[in-house]
Image 1 (cartoon, rainbow over the protein chains, first blue to last red):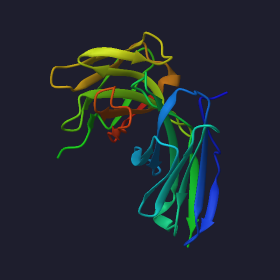
Image 2 (image 1 turned 90 degrees about the vertical axis):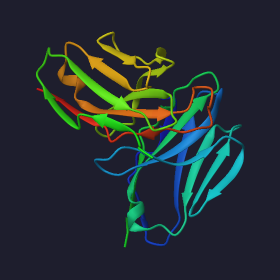
Image 3 (image 1 turned 90 degrees about the horizontal axis):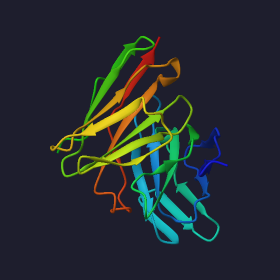
Length: 111
Length: 115
């Protein structure tokens, strides 16, 4: 079992719809979670971080964390074609400086 | 405010050769982590440097080594290259490892091809 698991996709949504990306993690001591966006051929870019249970909103993005279920999600509202990318979920525990990444979910937003 | 700088951008090496990749972290960051990303996979942790010491290491052989300099820049060295070492190598800079709620800033990466 991978430490951080994501559906590989591809996930396809129409423009203007809500895209929902999910991530589960196995290490219960993971405390901080991050979503990165990676365009094809580019390096990852940090979108959101979350470390408390509940929702955290930033513009069109909402991250959700449920530590009891070991589940993290990212919602993208009013999806745009420019949101088409691979979204990487990462987890970090308090004892480790490193982040462990999932393999990413590829999102395609169709005009 | 300079971001993370990696060099070179692309590199082609022959099996058995050695390679050195370089990274300058974002201004204000003092921790450098190196990741290997194969096509279609997430970044895999190689090691992390803080205060010029290797603080953590992933499941990579000793052929992979690194260094951090007093100005926080870092090098990744790979000896005895294998075809399987072909990947995108990412440098991620951040604050001190204890700043666990702080995410990474990635460089643009070095695409290494071993032939």
